[in-house]
Structures are given as C-alpha cells and as structure tokens.
Amino acid sequence: MGTDPDEDLVRRIGTGDPVAVRAMVARKLPRLLALATRMLGDPAEAEDVAQETFVRIWRHAAGWRRGQARFDSWIHRVALNLCYDRLRKRREWVTDDLPEQVDEAPLPDALPGDEENRVATALQRLAPRQREAIVLVYYQEMSNIEAAAVMQISVDALESLLARGRRSLQVMLTGDGSDD
Amino acid sequence: MSGKEPAMEAERFAALADAYGGQLQRWPLAERASAQRFAATAAGRAILRRAGMLDSMLDSYRIAAPGPVLHAAALRAAEINVVRQRRLRVWWLGLGLAGIGLAGVAAGLATVTIVTPEVQPEHYVLDANATAFGDVGPDADTAEEDI
Image: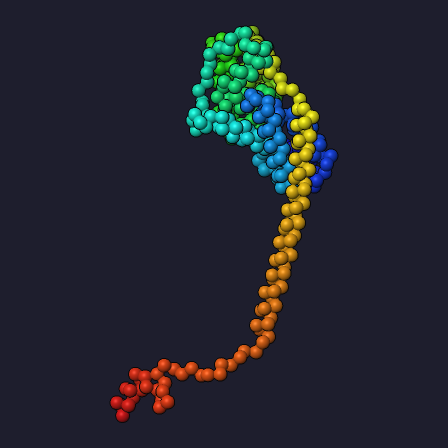
C-alpha cells in the first residue's frame, strides 16, 4: 500500500502541534464534508458528521498506529459509520434494516433546481451500499483496492455494487436501462 | 504496465466501464494499460462515450467548501481535546500518587508486623482429651485394659 501521506501529520498532532492541527483540518474537512453530504443528502447532518469525525481524530491521533489501513481510509470508515448511524435512526421507526431495493423510476426532467439537484436526488434513492461505493470511487477518488478496504469487501463485490449503482443512476437520470 | 499484458476482451472492458465510468484513471491500475489499447478501438470509444454521459451528470453534483463556522468548530474540538487530555493526565497523576501513598501504608504495616516480637499466649489450651489426671482419650483406655 506504500507510504501513508498523512502519517507525519498524525504524529505531529499526537504531540499537540497546533500547525499540524490546522493543516489536518484544511486537508480533510472538505473531503469529509463532501463524503457525508453525498451519503446523507442533508448538509446540516453532514456538518455534524464531519465535526464528530474530527472529535474522533483528535481523540485517537496520539495513539493511532498504521496497521492495514491508511489514515485517510480510517477516517472515511469513521465518518461512514457515523453516516450509517444517522441513516438507521431515520428509518428505525419503519424497519431495522437499511433497504437494499432501489427505486429506479426515472426522475422528472423538471425537478426543482438543476441537474445537480437531480443527481443528488438519484444518489439518495440508491441502496446505501451502492451509494457508498460510488461516493468512494467516483467522488472521493479512491482506488478500487482502497474503497474495497474501507467497505470491508472484496474488489469483485465492490465492482458489482458500482455497476448496479451506476445502472440505477442511468435509469433514473436518463431513463435508459439498456445493458449494452 | 508493459506492452506484454494480454489484450482486453470487449466484455471485460464494458464491465469495467459499467463499474468505474468512462475515465480510465479511475479504473484498476493493473488493467489500465490493456484497457488503454482497447479504448483506441471503435467499440472501446463507443463504450467510453456512453459511460462518459453518466460521468458528466455525476460531475455536476458539487459540494460547497466548508464554511468558517464548521472550520472553527473542528479547530475548537482539537483545543477541547487538549484540555481533556491534560485533565486526564492530572487525574492519572493523582491516582498514581494515591497508589504510592497506599503502598507506603501497606509497607509500614508489614514492617510493624515483622519487627514486633510475637506475643506468647498467657494460657495454654489443653488438648480436648487431656485432664488433670492425664490423657483420657481412646488410646489411653486401651492401654489400661491391656495391662
């Protein structure tokens, strides 16, 4: 997996270096906010998740040791767990499980807002694991190996989630469900 | 990454485009070079064009940069953690000192116990079978009968 670009920064945070703290916020906050916003579809909740992830970062930085995962993968897993806690809370009065079925009905062309709004809506209609795979690989620009490690699945399983997710998005956004 | 990689089948190329989209830099590193060669074919270009249409839609979903309030909150959380860690250190130090104090008390008690001479009991407790006339236990009776 090579060297971890965050390792030195994490070590300095562990010693209480304020410059390192600011550098970490500048480096990771936009990334974590983007992840949580696309996972939850709610900017306010996403901000809470990003902030809570930083609380965990500061708490564990001094004791963080690189094992199998890179620091960036670890904070993604922390943020995703917080996102899933919130997704479960939203649905706990209906069902204990997060739905795997996707509502693939094409979205109306004239959805309020613009194409960005349509994509955000379509993404929220995906099964959470498909959404997670697409957000990690497409938006967070993780490699297939990194994303599979964060999701704790095989690369084959990741590819399957990505393909199913993209196919559903294609149907919702363009009305085109052809496989070729 | 050399030219020795086997040629990619159209089916695999399409499966990768379905999963990773139309930009080869998102594709698995191990298959990128052979995918690059297939991408130059007419079939490859058609597959990428189709995947690229969805990509351009996905690209339109942008997230605004974090605002100053959130930025400040993340930094404040770090300060709070420093204070918390400091308190925790003081607490552990206090606990350590208390432990040392208790160990001292225990050592003092042990010393007193060892150094102080053992006090002999004033009364000798007789055996249950002993009387003023000697031992009246079962063995003593048998001995008398034998005589």
